[in-house]
Image 1 (spheres, rainbow, N blue to C red):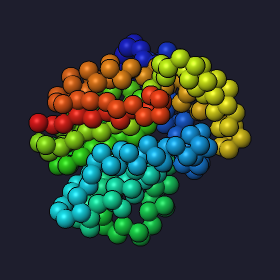
Image 2: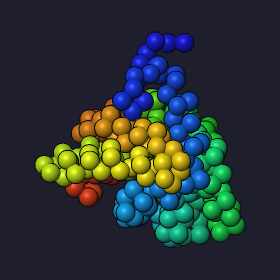
Image 3: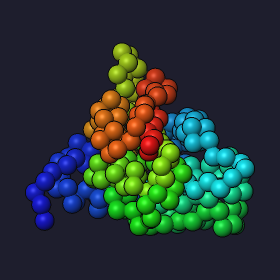
Image 4: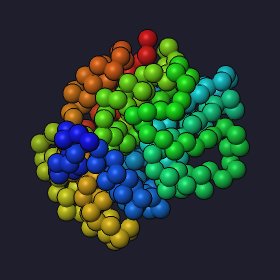
Length: 249
C-alpha cells in the first residue's frame, strides 16, 4: 500500500482508494445515469456526443473496430454503430458492472454481434495492442485514478493511424458564465440527483471532480506525453465541455 494521494472531488484520498469510491458512485446512479444526463444538461449531452461521433467518422464501406471506454450504458457506442456501416464493431469497456448491465439491456438484439461489453480497468486494458481504429471516452477520464496510465493504454491498443477522442467537462473560464455555471452545478445538480436517484453525494462528487480536472491545455500536454501527435482540443458550449483529439502516428 502506498501513501500517494489523489483527489476524490474536493477530498484528498490515497490513490488506491479512489477507484473503489468512484465505483460506489456509479453503482448508486447506474439505473438513472442517462436520465440524469438529460436533466442536468437540458439534453445538451446528446449534441455533445453527436459531435464526438462526427469526429470519429466511422466508415460505412469497410471494417472498423472501435473501443468506447467508460461507456457502460452504451450511449456513445450505439451512436457509432448507427453512424457506421455493417462492418463497424464496437467494444464497450467499463470498470463498473452495473453500468455495463444497463448498456446490455438497452442494446438487446439491435446490433447482433457488432457490439460486445467488457468489464475492465482503463488503466490495464485486457486487449491486444494495435487492434482498434479509434478510441473514445466520454465524461469518464476524470474518474480514472491514474489518467496517465489510461492514456498510455489508449495509445497501445490503437492501430497506427488510429485516433483518440475524449469528451470531457472543464472548469468554465468565461466571465459571468462561470458564476452561472458554478451556481447551477453546486446548488442545483446535487439536489436534482437526490430527487431522481436518491443520491445527492454522488452528484456532489461529480460536480467537484470537474473542478479538479486539468485545464484543456494541461490535459493536452498529458495526451502528448502518452505518445499522441497532432493533439488538439475544441471547446463546446462556451467551454463547458471539450473534445480532445490525438493521433497515433
